[in-house]
Length: 144
Image 1 (cartoon, rainbow, N blue to C red):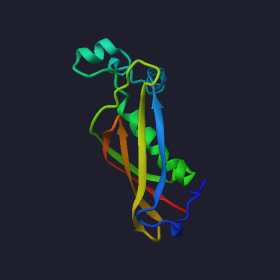
Image 2 (tube, helix red, strand yellow):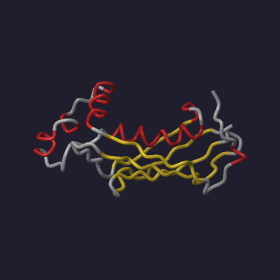
Image 3 (tube, helix red, strand yellow):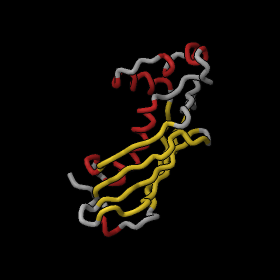
């Protein structure tokens, strides 16, 4: 598969479609099963609060993966993702109610890196409840 976005069609400042990703406790339990990370801070409210957290929190890697979907959906090819890194700045707190939490992701092309390889750097802004939850969130993708 090849990226569906052409390198020639993007410039620094090109915005990717923003996305919102709902997060509830059931989703966290399913993610725990898939990832093997059954740390009780991700599903047990009493335990999470007992260790000083405000409530159950989403897995950092879950949050990171949801943010990456904005980039891979935009390129149309998950294999176009060459590099991806973040700093975990704040947890995504997931209350036990019908709304749960929402991860908001905005992204834009920061710069063209290599004309020959058709790579661009994408900077992401990732928030939940108005708080930045991932810092220095950057992806490098190879475009068509």
